[in-house]
Image 1 (cartoon, rainbow over the protein chains, first blue to last red):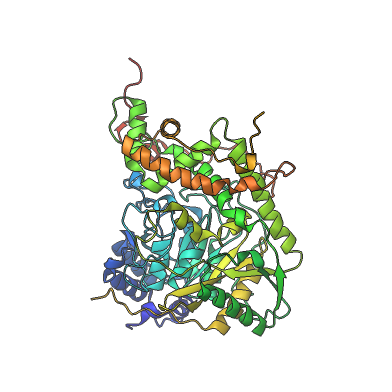
Image 2: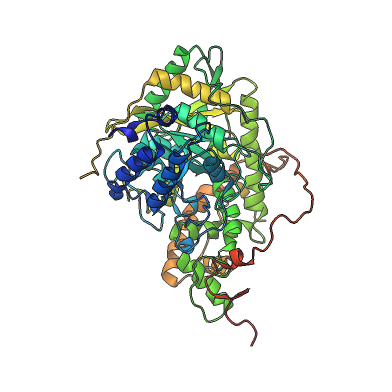
Length: 485
Length: 105
């Protein structure tokens, strides 16, 4: 079966359950295609031979009642995997092999999945193009020298190029939804507290969430079901009744009220994004949902707020990289000199920049002016959503202000890079769930995504709206396999 | 009397400030890197200072989006004999200890 890698997760599971395919056949197919796709640079660590061994072991005594029976899956290299190197895309963790497993990856293995390898990402998930990775940029399978988005760029590229049937990423300001949009796939950031943060390399703890990235909404719903769990090892994990998202998936969204926030019509937004949004509104109406104009008045303040809160938390989280307990160490004349050289040589430029912003906004004399101010504005941004959700069930916006850009195009101007996340950041600041679904193409044939933002813990509704729209949109990704010689 | 207009006040970050932050961050920077950081951080802070347009005197800061009280658990030892695992990734090991450059003369 040469077209194994073209199958969706749901199809693969069905074929394995019907014994038309074995886990070994499926795993080998993804390994073979990955071997031919080195030019995309999606893997930091390949675990291919171990994966095939695990698949063979699975086939000897297959448990077909599991949700991911013998399915090979590559994951973002931000998830700690026991005895498999975990780098967070950084030189400082290049020699780090965790002795424990993150809860979300453990949930995946417990349902029968098999680790294929660890996927490239921006260093410590700080970036929107995968260009800050110590292991080099990732190619977007859509076109050569095009960024796959970030920070989950290896993940988005791997799913779009069919090197893994599905994956998990993390999203702090848009790091699942923006790369999903850039590569023509589906990406979901769950409500804060749904998926455990235990064992995920921390960036900004009040914003970080793990989430699924998939070829379609159904696969996304299935993986969410597997990774979402209450976990006492994460003090911000929330104990609520989780749905059986796939079973309850429906394209009937008649009577749902969808809000269109006028503030997302930003200056200089390309016409194709504006047109896509209008098309999205038509699709929603076609599904029998009602469109309601709403206002989220503090939208323009979300990015400046994010660029205080996220670096502040990052500067604190990344204080642990001191060259003593684990990770890279540079030689120094004394202890302080060792710390300073280790961090200067071990972290890349963007990470250093953010640590310094964070340190500054938390430093004595500036805390009130910056950090406290940002926390107050964050409250106003969340209040905007709370108000809006009195009138609507969900909100529809574009995922990104543009399609994917060329490698190197924005690396010299941090602020222009940060603007990528203008539509996704408010969702993290408010702890809400958001999904990006592929919805059209620009004039170059590059994919464009629409974002649906839901109420907290209302992933079912979010998935249903996405599922109904997906059917109407009938998106086809234009991938030519240009990298396979 | 000089009135400071807080809404149009842009604190510029100079080389001295960068060197101070780099000390606090425990990241060594040479002259060239420091100069680049002056430019980068100023453009980022110019962008950040948009927040000064908003009056927030009566707004409560949001410290957590998860509106939940922290759960308590029993104070029980759940993992034992982790010494080897903890030491395993240390850059320089000496049996049971982390090793750092000499700190006492």
